[in-house]
Length: 238
Image (cartoon, rainbow, N blue to C red):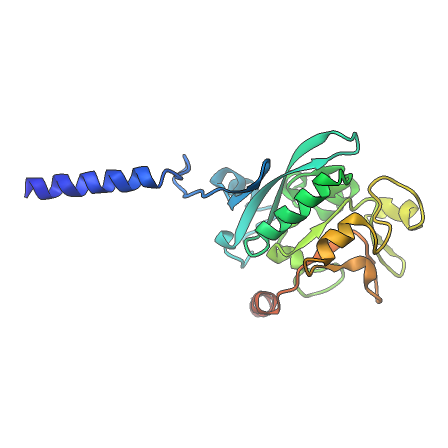
């Protein structure tokens, strides 16, 4: 009996050595590296704690395991390389790394990439600070339906210079001076030939700057009817 228990313990120890990806907080953290400085992984516990009550409020319906933390590099407005973090749905994590790596290679200017939780999930504050972000459990602007941001399937790029515009509504409010899309401004998404638009669209993402009923120049979303309809219907029942 003793020999049997000892063998079982040795087997468990060997298995643990073969699977060292245990985070210090006890959660398995498998880090996927696509390029140098570009990784994605499950949400670490310390990040989840910051999200709770902010981008992940008590009524958030999407399981945290459906989301991944992306660590990327980008060129800031100072033309220097910086590190950033973004949270997105696990289905688009690898694809988003491809997009941001492509933009990094082209030295596409992005002013900052921080989790919206640093702004207490206040989208207006994040946009006014020209912060690029993705996941935040919330409804779409001026609508009762979920935003694709609520599912980690949307990204806003340089939002101060690329506002949401519908009639007299401009968000962020500070972006009114950037309504002229012909201005030559660093970080302004100029049109369909813009490098960001090209990088997203060739991978099947939709750019809000091409919508007819409104313009959302900062916004890119990857539509997934199955995921969206499931959580949107679930949210309506609550």
